[in-house]
Length: 273
Image (cartoon, rainbow, N blue to C red):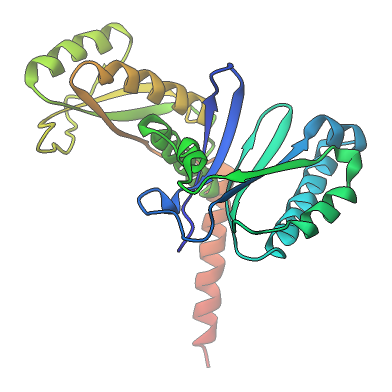
């Protein structure tokens, strides 16, 4: 089955900030047969920090540990890596493995890195209930999409710190709900985009497009989407996404122009006799 990775943040019931990376590929399917045991491996981040002099060194060491864990778990037979949970204190990796896995390779690997206070536990979970806990809810799905959008902008040279008009598309069940929310949003500083129209859906036939002038850093976008999603939830509305124009620095645009220019000259030169 192809991977479908999602990354988002969540606050636990104990108010702990968690960063979750999860493979959503099985969210609509029954758990694979024969993999009914949940394996959790925890790395104490304080211990890793104490052994490394720089953040770069810490990240490099964590990447090495992750690969060694992957090799050790895979050596035991079939295993599905479903994701990880990162908190300020620890990094937790989660797998589903066969019910009779002995984990001898993993135990040996952990014994070689006692300075990092690694530990693990394995327990029966035939229904993959912990995996269901890790999956994103509707709001978290939007946050995953936000991260994908922002990273795509970064990869295309966008200066995400630059303010610009950021548009948000909203949908409503009836015109009265849209009218009431429109008045509320105007009072909060949102601009109503009269000349733009959304795409109605059968259950939400009344669209509304709004905007704010701000940057598109991930924390900014996540905060705005979270605000609008919670506002709409109890008012017959649905959040339907956001968008903005790109803001590429002048030097980046110049490099693109030069690259295209050089490419054109190179192609022209090939046809000369």
